[in-house]
Image 1 (cartoon, rainbow, N blue to C red):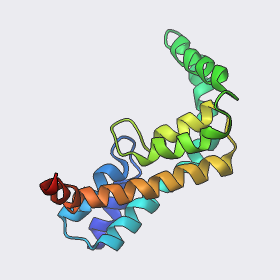
Image 2 (image 1 turned 180 degrees about the vertical axis):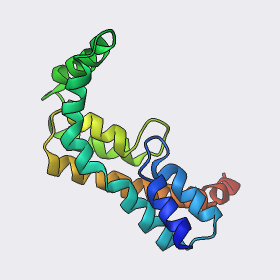
Image 3 (image 1 turned 180 degrees about the horizontal axis):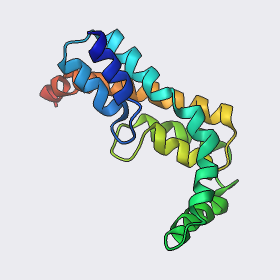
Image 4 (image 1 turned 90 degrees about the horizontal axis):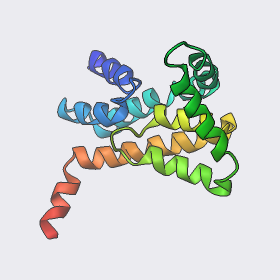
Length: 154
């Protein structure tokens, strides 16, 4: 079981898969909910501070590459135009973006958004972490069949 938990922990750190793939896998393996949830959420949150701190540097470095640098520069320019326009709603928007378990959303993309909007580390980390916690609950409910059960009454 320890091997499965370690695999889930590492899997929940992987971009794209994150806990959206790890929690259903843990449920399929029969790992108790609380343990599966805790391992996957911690694994998904662990890289967030590092990503927020270094994503900006990596993005600007990629903008200097020949042939593809213009693509990264466009991303930087879009982020610069949006700074300040979201006002008080940027943290709420970041939370909701990370919390809804859809393809392309999650902690890694949330870190990129926080970087582009030049958000401070602590508020961005809190919003992303709360989004991961909420997404984990949604994925657990989906993995345990709660949503399928509720559809019987619709």
